[in-house]
Image (cartoon, rainbow, N blue to C red):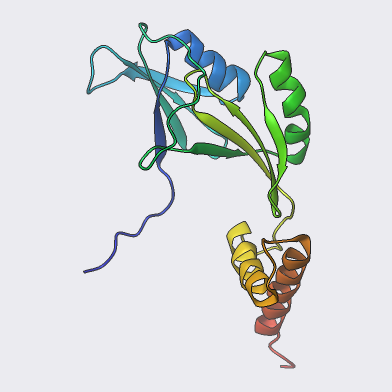
Length: 188
């Protein structure tokens, strides 16, 4: 039996508060364009809002006018979503903490993750949101995943606790060297 081949995240749907609170957070705080809305076709008491998180895919929010904001921490036990992370540019990341504070949102971080930096805060119903920015750019023809997979192998081989800048630099160097070797057709 063949495994199902995923081609990426299609969308993520979150239970939100009321319509106005949800639009204010997802469009107003996170800057996601509001694409469209329609009724929740499985629950006539809810509305379904669609936002673009920046990559042309979708984040959708089920809203209910009887649900009010409550930013208390949601359960993070087995089977629950721990957090959702969104990629942001370094400049947006740098400005995010002040922007969140200006809106009365408490942020935690920035946190050094070795290969990226993270900033955390809660949505209007307590879901943990992470803003993440890379500490490296992959070389042309490679993805962040290509670099991270190679950096991980180098990290394990060297006994490092986590991926470091040294692992990233060595991974990028190795990938470029391999690409150059594979593209070197020699004299014709």
